[in-house]
Image 1 (spheres, rainbow, N blue to C red):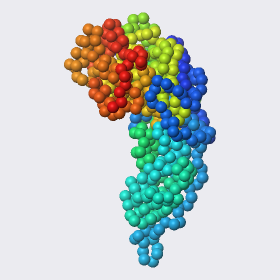
Image 2: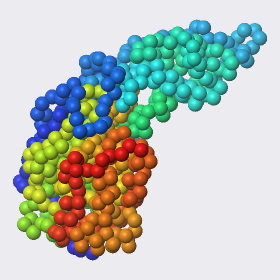
Image 3: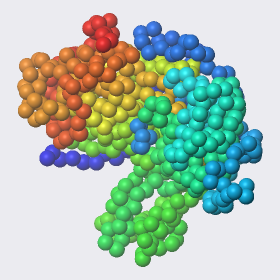
Length: 622
């Protein structure tokens, strides 16, 4: 093993992020679809000009559906979009949201027939009690979702389709219940008995179909023990689960509890000091300092013993209790008494609490190389990368940079673009294309490479997805990095995020990602220049050939870069089989070191990448 040492940022050395030319500024925090409209944008991402109603991407073969004009969106707030990680793990795009529908649901229908097993006296058998369900809130959630979904899904669907799909939840909860939508009326059946019949509203009438959905759910609760036993949360989750079963695998509904957890991962949870604590014997010590947290710029170091928090002694307290002492209102002050190992006297620091997303970038030095391990793309990831790059480039003996994206499931799209801008002088980092005009952007960057052309290797594996794939594709297509590992997941769809009246969230796929050389990420993933998933002997052969000036995986790289949307599955599988997706290994890091330490090898791998889309082989559509 080579000697490795942790990097820590020296605050005065921080350098401003390069300017980035983008089509629009995108947010990462979903916003309630009521009156609030607060957004958060990353500093140094500068919108040079507002996007046109439709961004023309002449070189891209992924065009929007021109046959269906999107509905005129009502004025409201701007939720976020994510490039986003595939479920269940979780970009940046603005979306015009729909106002919350507040009309209360109508009473349950009066024309419901009595159940077949009703007593002969005309009285129904007493229903089993169930949880109280706030049906006006269910109505509001469904109406808001319909208005949000209408103009944003990749393919056009009507409110009629959405609701009929969602009402399949009634059958899932009680298999005796079915829907009959073959005629002018929509009917709810229990066996052969009609429980409710309603005239179908116009297909695009959001409010009408939301009311129909609530009427049918209410009627089902009146007649079915299985549906009656479901809570409001169960009913809403089941409705959206059935609806999204008919769309792509990344569009989904997340209930209030899970949505809150996801939001904290993207933008930070409760305000705190930005410290991670651990127990060491009888002491509580600082085990990590968040690079973007409020404690980073004060005299707190890992290994420091925490003696007191706001004059409360930590001796005898549990780790959980002391961690909670560090939390409080955003901007409030917390005073820490610390003892540094080897010192006889403690010192006191005062920190202003802040909401900080979990740290996503970790750095260490390995000889003449620096390794940046990026675990996800939160709202601060690019800033963290900038700080580490600023420190690393102060070393005159630095020979290269390794960016480890293995296992990175993605996150905020804007952060991937901003990270690419730290390492590119100029150019297009990605293109997003969808049916909604606001989903269409050409993500161009300009500002300057922080590393002045330092050789870069990027490690990927079969779990690398979404925003991580966007960064890898951008640097590879611009001949700025050698990608090493296996084919990545192939998640090239972007979700926009909306917060619903129940505090749950909708993640709706609204655009496709096109890489700089015009190929679609969805399905294909990023094909590495050096493949390590075929075994050690194959990797050794590739390295031998690389030393002789030949890149063995070049045909597969060219095949992937010449692909164009729409791409049939057989074509995707034929390309990906050259380097099957697999988990990363220690050998990936060894290959990266060898490539970066040998200039001739690095040049061979870089120049094997095409630098002009017109020079690629003709795309085929099988």
